[in-house]
Length: 71
Image 1 (tube, rainbow, N blue to C red):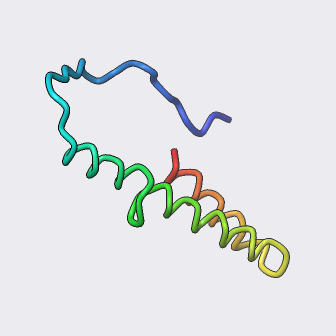
Image 2 (image 1 turned 90 degrees about the horizontal axis):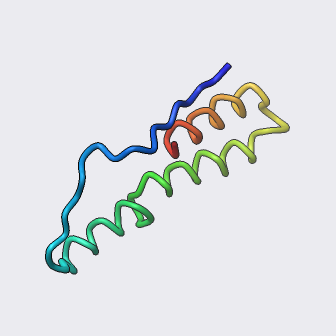
């Protein structure tokens, strides 16, 4: 069973005319900053590993959330 389907085509063509350092800073924060989806996915992944042995039923749901958030 396939859970994810990834289309590698761009939704639209982006044209960049000038460098925008302020926008780049905001974009970087969303990719890997303190409030990014990557951080959230890693938190769920870490929690899943912590509960794997004592609460195996919680492990599955945490791993699913981590996968969906990251993907």
